[in-house]
Amino acid sequence: MLAMRWNRGPTRLAVAATLLIARTASAGICEAPRVEWLVQDEEQRARQAKPGEGNGETDNVCFDNGDHSPWIEVAAAEPQLGPRLIAACSKIMDKRPDDRDCAIEVAYLGKDAAGSHDIVAAIVASRPNKISDRKAPEALGMTRASRAEPILLARWKELQPLADKQPGNADLQGDWASWRTNAAIALGTVGGADAKAFLTDQLAQKIDRGVKKRAAEAIATIDRRATAAIKSPTETK
Image (cartoon, rainbow, N blue to C red; front, side, top):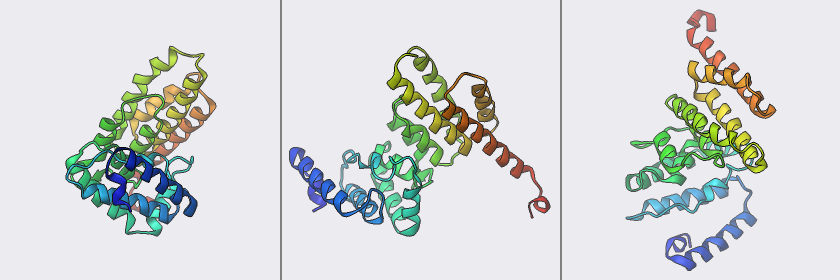
């Protein structure tokens, strides 16, 4: 049944829609059966000589509910799922190095690599820097890779002038607040001195309360990490 999903054109879309409806009815948005199906889909793609794009369910399964811990919780509760997904994505990325779905799926497992493939680089390559794409900064943070810090800072600085040009665009400003909120959280996870300096400057600006709150929390997280790094073993006992 799953194999039919990747055959061709309208048939593939019809089968995909039917499966999605059936899956949604039989399993919650982020329960083990739904994640199992996602992993099976990627394993199916990995077996193809020339895998096509993923089905895009990644952006809606487990990851789009405001709290992305359920994906990690499912992977922890079903410990075979994470390694299976990473193994499948490693094979897919051998043929599609910048695969969009695999990049974010592996990132949300808290990993920065799939086999020999750099997930941070894959996120950057597969997700152009857009104010409307709040998942890109979030995924970069989820990798927990320090090399994501300069990328997040550069992307923030690149988008800021675009947002400043349209202060009256409510939709864009809402997206921009969401983007910066996720980027601030990500910088708290992967950032160091440069991220702290940047976020401190942001706090001095007129910014959304939610962004300011997350920026302040990120600075506190960076400070705690820096303090822990310089403590001697006797001090941490």
